Length: 335
Image (cartoon, rainbow, N blue to C red; front, side, top):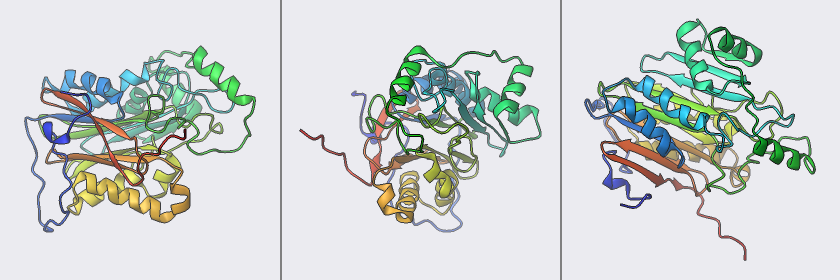
């Protein structure tokens, strides 16, 4: 079987049927059949790590944390965790959030020197009365709880930043890291959602944010309802791309609420993308935003503004990468 294959060949039902369901329609829990989905090609390895827990009957919350820790620790992935591209001042700052089936959630933003921002986010969720802790406060909390302080700026990311500085203008540039849209080097956020054998759902989202951002900038990834949302009665969703645009429509929460109304995951993601586009059609043509969702029936789907958004699904014995549908087609390369 090829790496990029038809969604119909996997246990996850990737549906595009009519959203019309009666108001009293109940979502059936798929007990005993765990599933994990995540953004981008590198989600495949993250899903495998998550499956070491899900496949043994473990909890979705443990699975998503374990899964996204894989790209966080990968120095060759320059958009998540260790080796992430720095901000305009040369500082690597991380954002992450995590949410479980009981609406419990935790988040960190602008966190420096800690590889596994997702684990600090879980610490916020489980050990504090708060939802979000940022900057120095997040670092202090991590260090007080045994996390190791490290230099996250690799030589490769530092060299690229210094090269960028030669011609850069100190002004926000949306999607500046999308040099190859949808390609090998474009991956930014990893968002992951999972359902365990009990039918409970959890999600995680982690990133080093937009390359060469203004110091202190925070996107959608650590914001509950924007970069991630979980409702155990309905489903869960996550996002990737230009976080400012996702925040403006509270994107992941919107996708979940559309699924509550009866939209399939793919159609819910499509509706969210359309809302983003309709808000500012001119700007949207040059941006990338993608949504990924899973409902309680085990159906998953995605949709993006631009061609190239991929996502990974692990269910049963399958671990497969799919290309999401998009509003705009693939841009042909100029000769």
